[in-house]
View 1: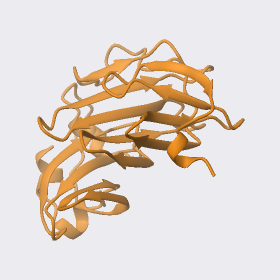
View 2: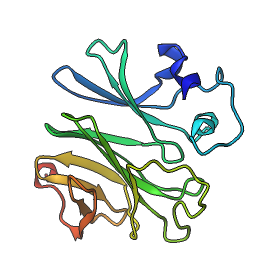
View 3: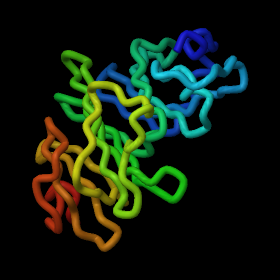
Length: 188
């Protein structure tokens, strides 16, 4: 991913959503790929940054002028982000072009990431053995709807299109319960 690292801050950081606690700033970014020399597909994942389906979570300095750390999420670009005292969470709802839903957790102390992919009911996730998938990614046996996404002191929550909530384990991101009433901190 050297080509991506060589982009200017302005080219690299195209923040679609930002969250922060105190001076800890995190963004979902969809970088400009116009200046990247794309390569032939390889198992190291470099070619995936040339894909318009590439996205990443970036940890920025408090002035939002420098990238402290980047978390690439090729083929599952996040669309939602939340932050708690312990972790940064991201998620996406699968759609027609990118059918898999996803939830991620970045530990704010260790900066380690875990990604759980939830395959769509019609298309299984990552069935091609040549598909690049980091060791920190897990493919679930279950699907997940992510109409809204919340992480708070009560847990991690994904709202279904029908209005019910799915509660995820805040560490493993496994589904704990479906059809729950959701986080009480968000009830009116």
